[in-house]
Length: 389
Ligand SMILES: C[S@@+](CC[C@H](N)C(=O)[O-])C[C@H]1O[C@@H](n2cnc3c(N)ncnc32)[C@H](O)[C@@H]1O
Image 1 (cartoon, rainbow, N blue to C red):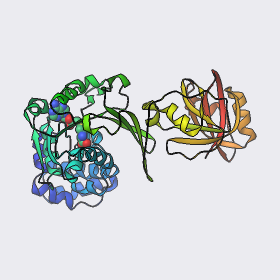
Image 2 (image 1 turned 180 degrees about the vertical axis):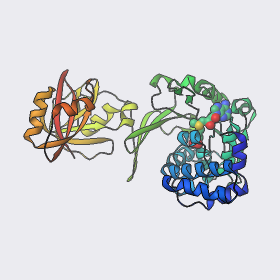
Image 3 (image 1 turned 30 degrees about the vertical axis):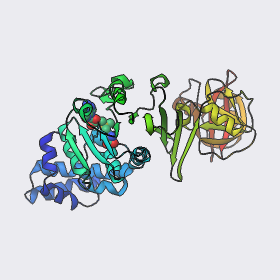
Image 4 (image 1 turned 90 degrees about the vertical axis):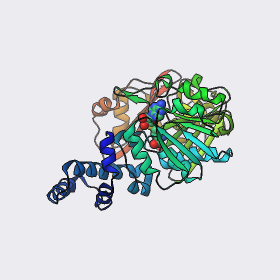
């Protein structure tokens, strides 16, 4: 989106049109567009309003009912922090007794909105003019929030703020960038601000290498419904624990695992198998989890755990092992057919099998459904037929 389009969208005519739109549906978008154009609305405004209507519908996943009052850019929505996680970011500043925050990279403003909603004064920087205009609209309800269209690094070092937050852009025209030094602004430049303002928090990609976590900081990996969505680096008073943490968010709440050991005892195959949540794996806390579950690793390099008894944990998915066999297509096919299995969910770790290729080779028929885990146990390629707990 360019700045002229963003200005058009924030005009009262566009906002009134947008608020009058029925819930978005791809089927009706074309006919609504025709009607609006026939009614004399400029074609570029019609296109912009229809796009916003679609983005608002998509944004429900991250913003719930708030989406209906917000504006978006496509990139800005994709990169935005989900509101419940943004609220957790903001809460760290409030808990540290901080009242003013500089958000160096506000995007469409999700993190800044959450901070403002918690009563913090927020100066939200955005280098892209159209995105800054959109953020300005999204932050309109909060007197304590202001958006500045500028390169934050040019300005922030002259500001007196209690805390700094950054969510550097991790993609360019060629796609996502995984090296934090390659983000915009670069991680090192943001962390250097700690010299004047110790309370610096940075949202980074979950693939951040452990050696990029600054000494004395907390690194928290976050998953939502089993997918790892981000890691947060929390420095100075924002750290609630020094070291690594995994925050696992599901519909029924959020649970945090902290600890320091990645070492787990080896174990033979037992009746129960646990697949740690991705946030636990990324945080290097598989050993910590294993110790808590009384479990051990089936292979030192693979994050599957074996436990002798069923345990309830938010940090791993559990399975009862029904049958184990060498990972050979014929053997597995025979075992599944004997169980009348026609549909199979295949999970794999540590073996180079492509489930999409294996599935048709099994030539399954039958009404039953089963879950199969393909992995290595003490170095041997193994197939397990399991039942989710
Ligand atoms: C990942 S997005 C931020 C998303 C935001 N936290 C949210 O939840 O909506 C990063 C944003 O930083 C902006 N940006 C990158 N470098 C910047 C800089 N030096 N100063 C200000 N903004 C910058 C990009 O234009 C982009 O919109």
